[in-house]
Length: 120
Image (tube, rainbow, N blue to C red):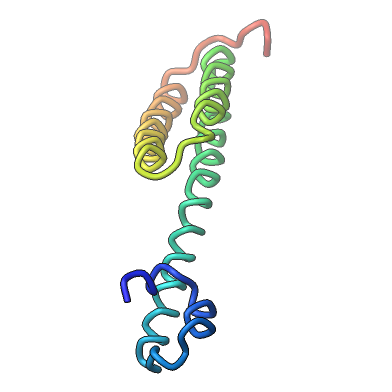
């Protein structure tokens, strides 16, 4: 049954419907829903983090800091695009820590504004 838990319920019912009970089928379907929800969360988490980081980067007051933060966010996500599993989870956690730092920096930049740059 451990191998059956990894297979979608439709595959199990076609292969050995005489062996699978109704309760096992219900449990397997719930497990597949849980894993699909987990997969959706894992694909949505990086996208939401990316958007949050860019949103906070655009809040930076100084042109140089703002452009640096935007450039770093885009470069970081580009280099970590192919990560999967534990490495991807670690990168997301690191990104959330960087988001907290970026939020603090944006607040500090608003508290102590600098003169406008020539580029602005």
